[in-house]
Image 1 (cartoon, rainbow, N blue to C red):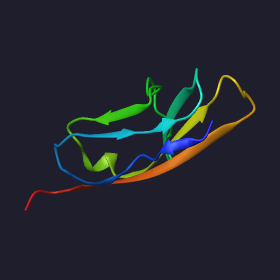
Image 2: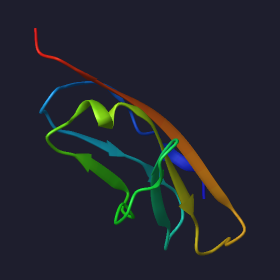
Image 3: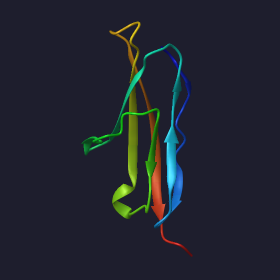
Image 4: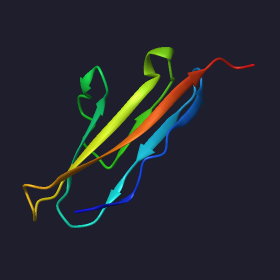
Length: 88
């Protein structure tokens, strides 16, 4: 399974919302989103991960690991960076 669409990070206003999404080929994929330095995010096991009411704690790099059921030894990951900024 190859990643066909990478998650795209960027700037998020403080208190705002954003969603990171990934698309991968193959069937029966499983997903796990992780915040770098904080470990796997509990419950973040879908192809998208939403941040609501963004706080400065949400700033950082996020990775998603995609494991394909048909080739269980293969996992691929992608990285997106989020920067939470104060409104002007």
